[in-house]
Length: 80
Image 1 (tube, rainbow, N blue to C red):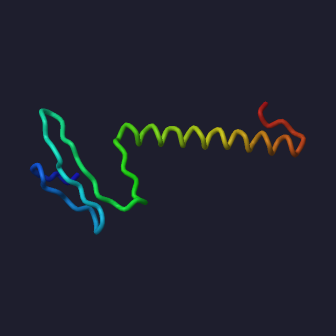
Image 2: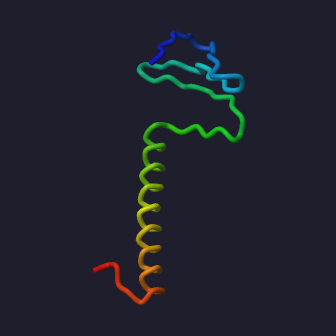
Image 3: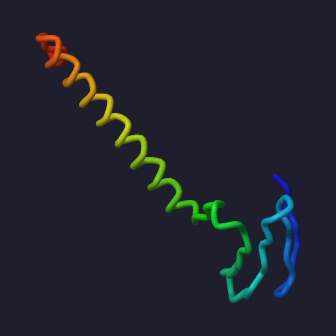
């Protein structure tokens, strides 16, 4: 992991088109600002984990539904 020190008003660059600004430091909280292309998604870690979990569950449901549909169209029951 790369660790950098920045002060309020300073920024760092990630690649050519992502810039992270230190907006405010208050107590143990740091407010950051981001400039990035619209196609780049930026999430807090806890939100990212929720999205990943939801995608995983959706993939499981889709696989189960596909299996049930395949069994139904072939006249066999794969759920047993």
